[in-house]
Length: 284
Image 1 (cartoon, rainbow, N blue to C red):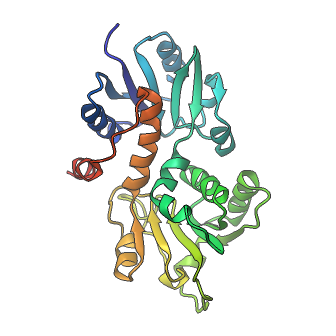
Image 2: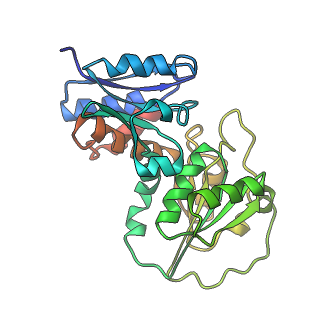
Image 3: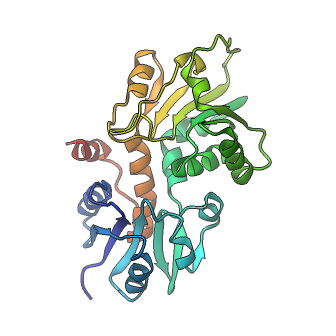
């Protein structure tokens, strides 16, 4: 048998940070394995899965755009959370079957775990974006007891997402432009509350339009979270920090979802005691 390996697949794929993350952890753990990237087109996805099924050294793959939904019918079993989100980002062989998981939800929540471990009178999240990344975030925050406000260019799409992912929840929708202009809304006492504002869109990313956002919409004491990784310090996070809000950047979710996948691939927890060095490597 050759060296075991896992990999990330997508189209394009050269920009993926996943090999850097997983190789860092393999090195720290002393595990004799590799993690690669593999360019897989939509037309080649079925053939890729067929080939990897027959490879005894393959420990699974992470799945990035545009395959997170297209891969589902090619698998034998889908984890219930991944089925609900409607997207798979991690595939592992288990007892002869290929099983699809979604670790994005766990990865998103990881930097909020200390907050979520506490008790709150009320939890609310404002989520900007209705794309693929928003699906896992909506499901994750609904499952942790947040009332959600989902903002997008199309409120019907936002409502449909909420109805699909948390039909019992009493959530709200808003036009994206609503958060771009000033509000004179007077927030009530937020003591005992937990508020999070999330940019779950590509707005503010290199090559994308800026995120138009007015901070009069942010309750006192909120956590401001941006899933964009390039640039890591987005204008949204920069202004949030300048205004005294706690911030969470896109690498937090990326590293968190990778850690959940690493354990599935290599049957060992990701060594997280040197996250600062990992971040330095990712941003070098």
